[in-house]
Structure formats: structure tokens, C-alpha cells
Image (cartoon, rainbow, N blue to C red; front, side, top):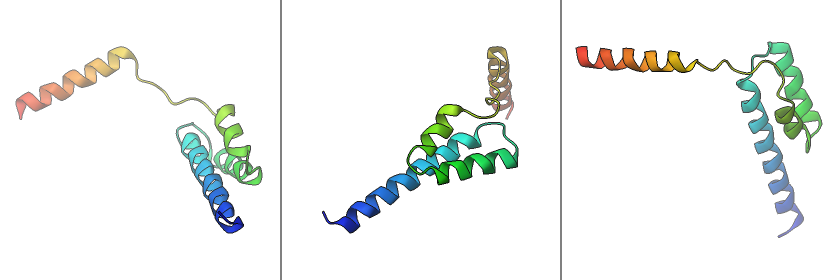
Length: 84
């Protein structure tokens, strides 16, 4: 393994970590400015940035449906299939 291969592997790992951090941020409720700032932070701090972005969990968590909501939506979907 030569130096060029190691550089390519390192660059690929850094890119993969950045993409994972962006997918993690996508699910959070952030304004565009906050999303952009956290994305820049993940790029500027190349090794620890993506980990810090994911661990910090900025913004509000995504809203989960209440257990009753989920059951009701399944009943409605089942009723639609029986009618059709």
C-alpha cells in the first residue's frame, strides 16, 4: 500500500463521515442557517466534526407519533384495502 492509496482511503472515510453527519442533521428540526452552520463545522473539523455534530444532536428531535396514532393509521389503511 503506497501513500496515494492511504490518502484516498482517508479522504473516502472523511467524506463518508460527513455524509453520515448530514443525514443525521436532516432528521432534526433546524433552520437552514443552523443546518448550514453545523455542516460547515463538520467540514472544518475534519476528523472530529462529524462525530461532534451527531453527538451534540442540535435542534429539536423529530416528532414521533403517539402509539394510538399509529394504530389508527393502520386501521384506516386496512379499511381502505378492504373497500378496494
